[in-house]
Amino acid sequence: MSWEHLSRDLHSILNSFLDLVECDGGSIYTIQKNIQGESVLVFKAMVTRSVGIAAVPDALKSVVFRLDENTLVGKTGLHQKFFKEHYPNAKTNGAINYKTQNILSAPLLTPRGDLVGVVQLINKIPQVEGAEAQFDEKDERLCGIVSAQAALAIENSTLLFEQEQILDGFVNACVTAIEARDPVTSGHSQRVCDLSLNFAETINKEKTGSLSLIHFTPTQMRELRYAAMLHDIGKISVKEDILKKEKKLYPWEMELIEMRFKLMKATLRQQLSGGASELELARRLKELDRAMQMILSANEPTVLPQDVSQTIIDLTKLQVQVDDNEVCCALHEHEKERLCIPRGSLSKDERIEIEKHVSFTYEILKMVPWSRGLEEVPLIAHRHHEKLDGTGYPQRVKADQIPIQSRMLTICDIYDALTAKDRPYKAAVPLDKALAILEDEVKQGKLDAILYKLFVNSKAYIIPGTEKSRDKKVA
Ligand SMILES: [Fe+2]
Ligand SMILES: [Fe+2]
Image 1 (tube, rainbow, N blue to C red):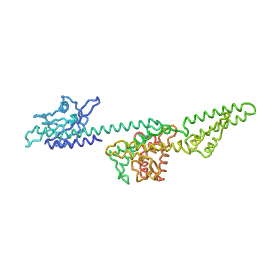
Image 2: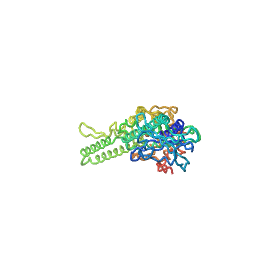
Image 3: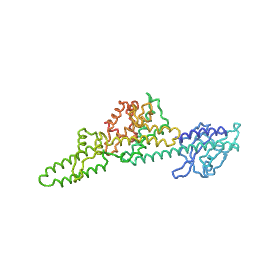
Image 4: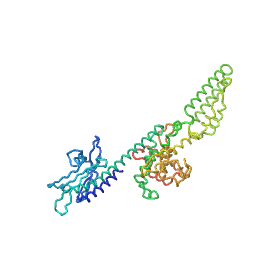
């Protein structure tokens, strides 16, 4: 963005040069690195008043000049000093019918003395029409004053550009760090970001209705991009086991139960072997097998049927006497609690722990000194689990405190969580069902109805070039 601003600013600075030094045309070149990493000069602004040129022609945009003796612009950059050239017998350039008679070429140096570009002024305007004019020392002095201004503009713009690059790199590094802890949901932040930006661009194109009054500026788009990329950064503070939890019991808890069952079976075989006890042994072993089946089924993160829940409670009473003083229970109290989670894999405490990620997101993002125009990044991200009716978290705020960017983010976040195909323990929800779930939330007054309608009608959920496969599921 700052490069486009720079080009506009340099054209206005160049016009100041032409007024001040009284000449017909001029160009400003800036330093850039070519593919080999060498510094070269490229056209950034061009004005030739007598023939109506007010911008760099397309044909010249890709022309580069090395810092060497072969061209005047290259020589000015190489030696970092003024050059004046005069061509009394200059030929007319047939293409634009223009004749260059004299050039004042000056380096653009920052106060630290770094070369950031070159300015060339062409054809000094004579005081008397028809007379011959040349650039003099006074022009050099005037040119020197405006050159400093141009050099500063270029340096500021370069710094801004570099700052944006650093911020982008930092944001990407953060996302990599979050997703490295939970490879199962990797790609979520980038997809939510792509969806949110696509959604914002769709809103920008709206011609009717209340959304046509909203327009996201390029800076607001950047703000939304950072908020979307970093909305789950607080997950960095959530325990990895909880983050990756797929079933109600952790794997090591399940292993412990299996070991216990093996011990109980081995004990029973020892105690009830031979003769009349065989039938009782078979009954007890079968009972344990059924109990294990029940535990495995209850361990799945689906909705727990009432009868399974009751059986699991009863399993705490299923015991085997392993020696005189010790009894082995099929299920311990805390295991029963976990297996009786009515829906999903998380206990109440674990859910609270996961939900804390939003507050951490806010705390982390508040520590970043966001530059002008990006101040709302922490707030936009902080509200991504809030609902319009106040039933969300962490602050349970209502519609009037939820910015539109957060409302968009919420829709994109839920949509991606439902349709993501990269979770081995959870099948991706088909598109039509995912939209129906979102619609249900709209009907309950939790999500923004107008935004949802546009999201669906404009198919903003399809990220151009990447999301076709998800869309196919509609049919
Ligand atoms: Fe989240
Ligand atoms: Fe998320």
